[in-house]
Length: 398
Image 1 (cartoon, one colour):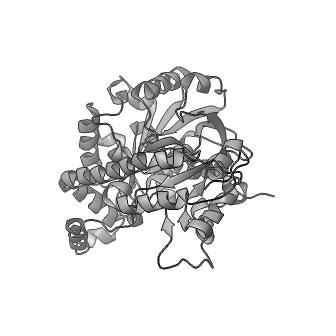
Image 2: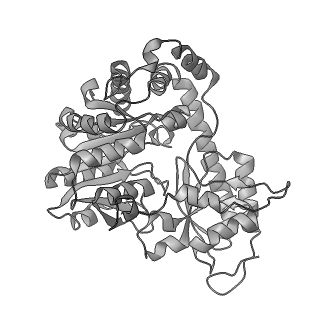
Image 3: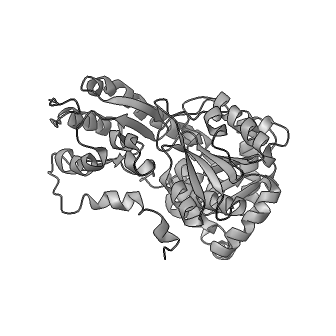
């Protein structure tokens, strides 16, 4: 008998890290790890000081409200309202132990075994893993060369078992920023079908566009259709403190409360206090972080002609990710471990983001560039250009 965990695949990040075991990296060519989209630097000093002060408060070591501290929920509601130009109430906000829990809690509240959720391909692997472990079918929605999902194509996939459509924008793994009209079309489809539209906006703060990326919160009764997910980890470098959020109807949050109370009881106190301090004090600092990410994005664009001359294609770029089509005869699942040995680069093959057997997975890589500065990214391109592997057309790259 297959258990819930046996029904899905191993976590991709630990699998990729195993490719580095036993590999000796020369001093002049250290490993460049572009496999994971998580900040590796500590929170800024002022935030660390605020967190240290919070440790002295006895309440910081106790259980808190299941759906999160009231001051953080209210602050995020104000932030959300200002960003999207529409009223948002604290009662429509829940704080979770990371954004992965936000997705898991939402799916658990909406679905049971045998239900279906539509996921654009390539998908975020943890979303697929949770659906597998929940007995919920992930229905693949191909996105083609643009990596932008089409609502009309999704309509054809809806059945009586469909409970939600889950989008990620800016996208993980593709990096693409979904146009406002795309989100509008999906919202209209979900409302018409009586299902939920889940929009994971973990990377919202690093969108290259200014202003609100969509107007969905201005729609009357939006919270009966839309569920937004968010992560403080990327914004304030709080990955180890696990603080995420859900913006949805109070009725759905009532059901989600049951999940959180059973799994973690409440979100971590120090992480919540750090997130609140960040919301109230780090607006300018976060704008600088966004500028740095956009500079790294621009570095990739400047260097791409070097790879394009050798047959590479940039399919998506934004927030933390670039999605690259490679020209090699070697499939991506074999090329990725070899890149560690031959070039000292750790990136993920797109086989980790598509259904088993989908041929597009073997033609693409995901590059998580957020932790690589301009000089490091330039070295990545230097190493990729230097590869002399056989090309899919039968020639040699060199």
